[in-house]
Image (cartoon, rainbow over all chains, first blue to last red; front, side):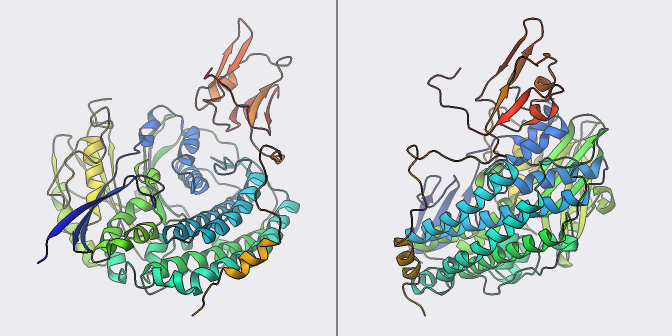
Length: 359
Length: 119
Length: 105
């Protein structure tokens, strides 16, 4: 057996947008084991329930993560509505779906850019973010914020999108779709890109299931599971199939996300075509009781909310399991046996969001 | 979709945990999350969520704050992060975790910030 | 196998206008719905303190006796909760961001 070396990776590393530390045990150039360390950005947001009223927890949930902000707010509202219990108007459900899919497209484009940056393709990175900027502008135009949407509340949504604006969103997405296709073709077909992604960080279907991988990380390994099929919000009225790739390497995970961008655009089109009129929110009265468990598909995977209430203004427990938290054990599995030079690409391929993870 | 926790919860005894989890693992369920919370009687309530084909199942039980819970990370490796987190935030002791950070996963200014004593 | 896939896009973009604009020479355009910062028309305000109670970050302070309404812009998360709750509709959400300051308060 050759000599073992331990190389610290992170929390400061050019490829990492957020701090995670990995101790990589190496044999020559091969990683044999990786041990994670998190806890650099723990903010104690779950503890805030003791101080904030339940309606204000939506703002807190929205700030757990800057990228999945809207879906966090949606899940939190959904769980509190379940506890109250109240029925949300149809139009609000559709609007939530449209915003959730917009946030998914911008999150995936952000990740594609970061991935391009990780394998050293700066120009591609800039083109991905140029397209993402257009989506952010649309979000600002409809919701009011660029990254923190701030448009979801318990009982519905806070702002309406006029029908003319909805049609405009679809027109803009139709144009964007062509441009996105042009850029994503580079990821799928380019020789040098494939060289960095194909057969890197392979995870089998069994491992993905047993280790509890979520989202595109799981679907890249051939497990066809997408929490949107549970039919929350307006997804029960829309037609879609979970995107699956079977190879289980970084290239498969990239392809899943690319296909999901187009799937999201299609879902927005369907939602805009079907959206009914009517009120966008109902009046919220009373205090929540009981406990609720929600599982919602975010851009990075499914987020699980477990809320417990005791009939007062403050919730008793606000527990969030974010997708990256569930994706760390699969990441350790992928890292075993890879080359040291591939570590940054593999770490990025799970779309890590550490602020999310630690809350 | 409405998914009340009460509908999918299965109450078990703390000693049964390891047996039940290995049974669920054998059925091909995957671990979704582990949550800990305080109860009115100042005990800890643990919720282990599993999922198979979009069917959820929450194993729940209550333990007193000074109890020791057996880790399930030998059967599902992905549990180790949740268990370390529960130990660091609540101060609940969990035995035989696969990767035990020994209280250094979250180094908070207040030790065990969500524990029963500090409230 | 494809080589230099991005070259086409790059060449095409060469003849086009830059995607970025020269800030601050070219001013940023805000949309109508942008949540920028909170403003008060103090003439209509009855100093009821609802906004203070609603504010999730406790950025607003209202003093009924002294007829005083203050906001700490750095604490404000621009959620527009105070604007929604104002009974006299004298609070409004401006669509420009609050200007830079040289000291904290």
